[in-house]
Image 1 (cartoon, rainbow, N blue to C red):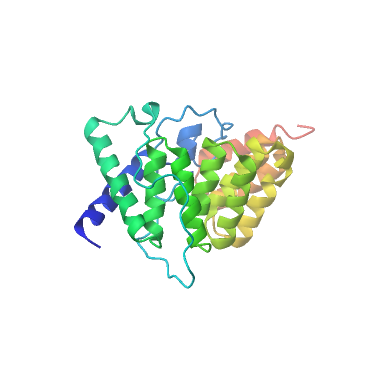
Image 2 (cartoon, rainbow, N blue to C red; image 1 turned 135 degrees about the vertical axis):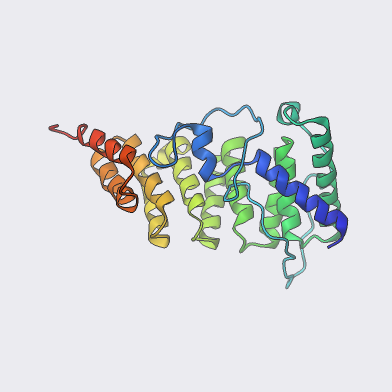
Length: 274
């Protein structure tokens, strides 16, 4: 990989860390602590840049070229090197930062045109386009990444977040989250996102919100993130007995957590007959 591409990759990763988000930081965005806070409903986004952490929707992947055992389909999305910044999305960046982002975007856009089987190039291109508010461009890049690498999980998870939070096409968000989970059942974050999609947005399927978390716990029995998410879900739903059951599992893993112990005692007072 030449020096320009390496530089672009480094800048892209920095950008992702500054403007994307994932589940460890979701509680920062929506309020509360990670241990036992109530999550807020999905807000009405104004499309301003959001922070990120490493395990995140809108995640990047290690540089790789997808092995090609078939003729790659043609890319019919928005031009890969196109710059379509939305003023509200880039207003928090300095002029220098914006120029770095634009250069990186165009470098990745050029690279994927030359090497269309470069999976990470499409992932990073989508991240950069999403960063500047070009959600259609991000969608097209990640859709193509999913097409050329149908067994990867990152592009599908990113599309799930994009369709849910930004494009508000909830059925497409559900489909992409499900594919991501199928391709990578060991990623707790995607189960949480799909559960939240059901709970907050796909109201007709809200009864599936706990089912998907339970499925995730079966696949990842040591994940406290999923256990906490299920406890919070039951608490938000007013199912206090179930919430207590799952918070007690969290407490057993962190027995010195006095705040959590107090939360459990408070929930016990809400039980019928108390």
